[in-house]
Image 1: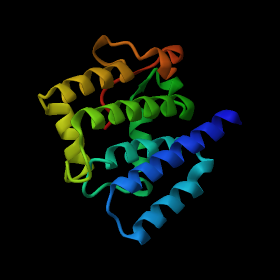
Image 2: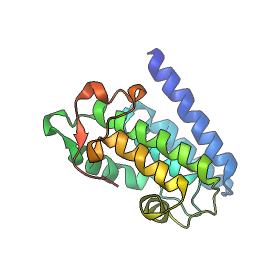
Image 3: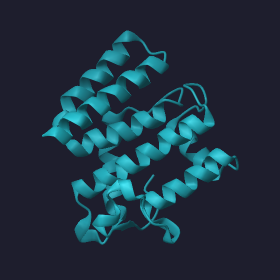
Image 4: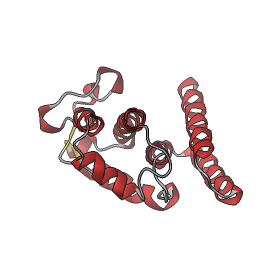
Length: 170
């Protein structure tokens, strides 16, 4: 229960931080916040929403987590090996690791709401850019996913799952 409370407050902080950095209409902000709060009962959706919010801090026209999370969850779980361990609990650990990686990237890139046109532009630059921010992001991303023989960070909880991603799910 304590972990859920901590996760809830962390998520609320991210939501308020993201909304404080973006210029949205009050109606858009209220709709997204209400949707986020209503979906708190589903931990995997909450983890995906935190991931989308970590990207939206730097995106002019951000994806709505309500419309993209079901597909992202499915894609992520489909990349987890061994397949019998592609549970919600393991997927949440991956989303949380990728969220931390994005937040570190955002700081290194000093990005804001107009840095990228869309979430797909944000992801494309992360994967193809040549700045130190992108190089560091790729290394951290590969560690989270155990891609290219990397090992997940000790604080991610992923080492204990003995899983890896087949490829980049995003």
